[in-house]
Amino acid sequence: MEALAHAAQSLTDALGSALERGRITGIFAHSLGGPGSVPALTDLDVPELHLDLLPGTPTEAPLLALGYTHQPGGTFLHPGGWRVVVAEEGTAWATDQAALRDLLLAAPSAAQRYRAAFVQAGRRRADELLLPDAYAHHAQTVGFAPALFAAQTMAPLNLPWMLAGGWALDAWHGTVTRPHEDIDVTVPRHRQGEVREALAAAGWRLDACRGGAYHAWTVPIAAPDFQVHARHGGLPQAHLLDVMLTDSDDETWIYRRDPRVTLPMGQARLIGAQGLPHLAPEAVLLFKSRTAGRDPRGKDQRDFARTLPTLNAQARTWLAAALQLTSPGHEWLAALVD
Image (cartoon, rainbow, N blue to C red; front, top):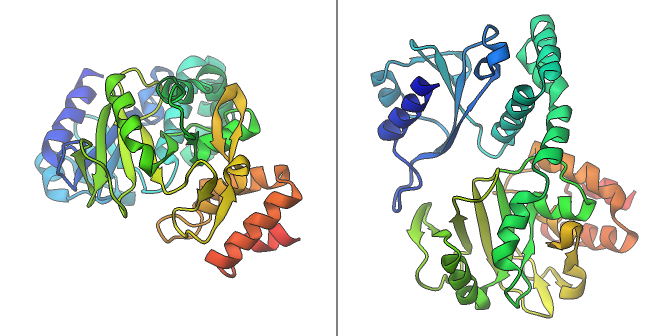
């Protein structure tokens, strides 16, 4: 594993780190993975280094200079006996792989089941078979710890902050349904100074996201920019706290992508599991209905299918009306009006 740690550093030196302020390319995160990284399964495959890379396709020249060879499927193999895999942008693949590895390391019986499935049907099938168990193991061993860690800093602030994204849905459901690479929270833009001061005082590294690069968050962020990435050495099982500024106020929640869509704050901000405030599920699903101009991602489709049965008639009607306004003909409308 020492060789892999050295390999990770060499890759960062060669490709750059996207965490370096002012850069628009480089490694955003990396992790060890694959069945070959589990001691009980090393004979099945080589260990892997999973890269979250900006942009999503690496430049081959630096990798070739480090001794890697390009393999089918866009991976790169090193003669030292490991493989580099670049995580596909917008998917949950890397977080799923991390959860699988945690399970396989912790449970010998799971590793035995994985081996049997791998030998019989290959890695893809083995991953699919064990992933539900990996999710359950993650929920049991990690649970709401990442969100609760962030809440320690946010909760004392007298403002309507709340969880968004997948964490909001988990707070709504009352259980952690899958691992999340970061923790999304929303805060009112006009209260951002209080948030910045509280996070800085608690030891978070604060980076404003502007022009595809990081910049130290030292001055107010004006529209259209809206995002801050906060990192803390004590944050468990998550890369960062993703702070998103909204134009909402104490009375009204405003959809950032289309201000025509609103909700009374009393309906938009709910209190869920562990006392965590979260965005209402119908509003979360509106965000998930289209990400970066694309149709719903696989994990968003699964979130919709899991959450739809829990929505009451009022929430369904609101979401249907919002989709008809912002995305006429959206594929979810049929299920909402059925």
